[in-house]
Length: 96
Image (cartoon, rainbow, N blue to C red; front, side):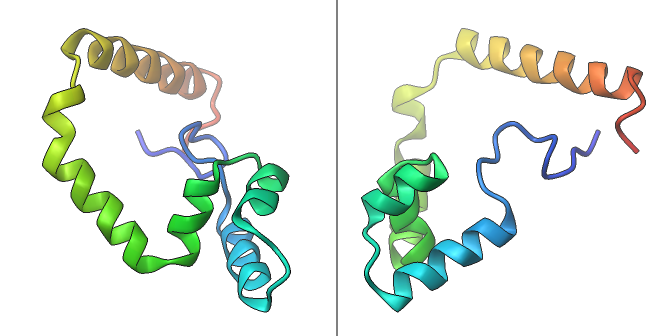
C-alpha cells in the first residue's frame, strides 16, 4: 500500500518546508539549530537538507554500518506496527 506524504509518519517535512529551509539558510541569518527548532527536526537533518555532500556522506555511512545496529526483533515490531497502521487507513477508506 502506498501512503501519501501526509499519512507517512516517517516523513517529518513536506516538500514545501524543505524548500523553505534551503532558501532561508541560503539567504543567511538562520542557523541549523534555529531552523531545526522551528520545524521540529534535528540540526543534523537541516545540515543534510542544505548540503548535498553531507547527505551523500550520511547515506554512505549508514550503508556501510547498518549491520552493527540491526536488531531483528525491533525490526519485526516496527514492521508489524507500520503494517497495522496502513491496514487501519485502508479499512477507513483513507488510502487510494
